[in-house]
Structure formats: structure tokens, C-alpha cells
Length: 95
Image (cartoon, rainbow, N blue to C red):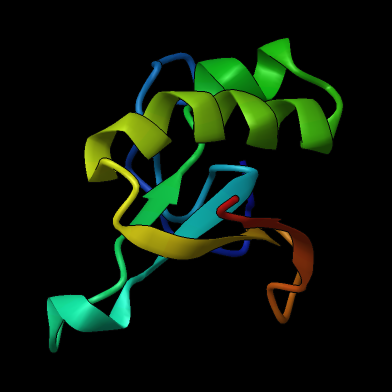
């Protein structure tokens, strides 16, 4: 957990927290859907502890979350949520 951010979540839970989660995944939705916001998801804290490799954690998140949007996205971008500036780590393109 980052000590410089105020957070009231419990680090032992399975929840996803915008402050404490290791990865942030943004689904860039298709343009034909109109004016729609791109959904943002954070990794579960239990999975942060389970998967030490960021690529493996991102792949697990992709497998779980891609079903929710039924292929209506064109790209998924994964950011490091703990580093200042939130640098981009990975990018998944739809086949």
C-alpha cells in the first residue's frame, strides 16, 4: 500500500483500489458506439500478491474483463498504478 496516499481500504481484502492496486487497465472502446467513456479497472489486491510478474497479472485481468465488453473495444492499455506519472506498461490490440 502506498503510504503517501490516504486510503481506507484493507490490504488483506480482494477488492480493487484506485490507490493501492498495482495495475490500471483501460479499455479503449470502439468509435461506432458513440460518445462513450472508456472503462477503467484496477487489479485485485489478492491477485497483486499472487502474481509477481506484471505481464502475468495483466493477462489474468484481460482474460477476466474482456468478456464483459463482448469485443466492443479496439485496444486495451495497462498502466503501472504505483509509479508516479502512471507509465504505460503493456498494450493489447484486438485481433
